[in-house]
Image 1 (cartoon, rainbow, N blue to C red):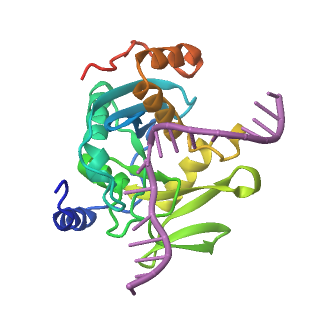
Image 2: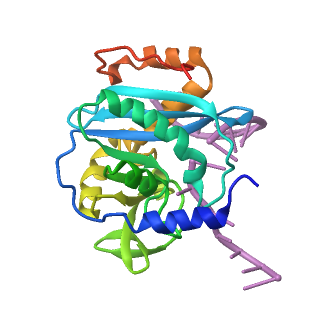
Image 3: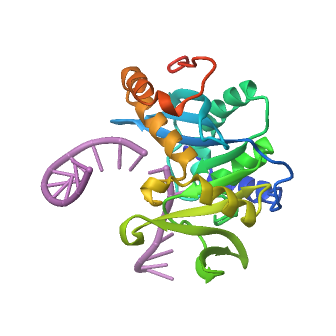
Length: 247
DNA sequence: GCGACAG
DNA sequence: ATCTTGTCGC
C-alpha cells in the first residue's frame, strides 16, 4: 500500500494546528510560484518548477527545475504527499540563492481542505513561509457571497475566495489562505497578479509561469530551452540556471 | 447507500 | 495531472 491514509490524516491534523492566519509581518519583494507537471505518457515522472518573480515589475529573477520519480498516487485530500517532496526540493534550491523571504504561491488549496491542510498550507508550515493556495476546482467548503465576493467558508471561517474569469465567468480560481497570511493580504496580492489581458481566464502570474515552465521542462530540454529563448523578455536573470535533468 | 473528490 | 478531438479567433 503506497500511502497510509490514517497516518497521513493524523499528520495533517497535527500540522494544521500550526497554521497561522494573520497579516503578513513584512513586505515580500518576491513571490515564488510552485507547480508540478508530469512527463506525457509517464505520470510517474514529475517535473517541479519553483519560479521567483519580483513583485514590482513581475520579472522572473530566478527559477529551479527538478525532475524525478513520483511514487505516491494522487488521492483527493492527500495531494501534498504526492507532490510536496519534489516541489520542496525545487523550492529549497531556489531559496538558497534567494537572499530574502518570499511569499509562496502553490498550485492547490490552502486551508480550504477537509483537515485544513492543503498542499499550500502544508508547505507553508514546513518552511515557515507565508503561502497562498491557488486551485482550479473547489475541494472542500461552502461558497458564500460576502462583501461582493464569493468567499470559501470552512468551519465558519473565511478560508479564501473565488475569482471568476474568462467569457461569462466560466472559469473560476479558488484562492485560499496557506500560512502566515490574511484574507486582506490575499486580496491585495491576488488582484494584482492576474494578467489583465487574460481576464482571469488563466491562473495568477506566478502559478501560470510555474505551470508553463514545468510543463515545457517535462516535455524535454529542447522544448524548455526554446520556450526560454522565446520568452527572454520575462526574465531578469543575472545568471543562467539551465539545471534541468541535473537530478 | 450515494455523491463528491486539489493535481 | 495527461490524452483526445474539434472549433474559434488573432
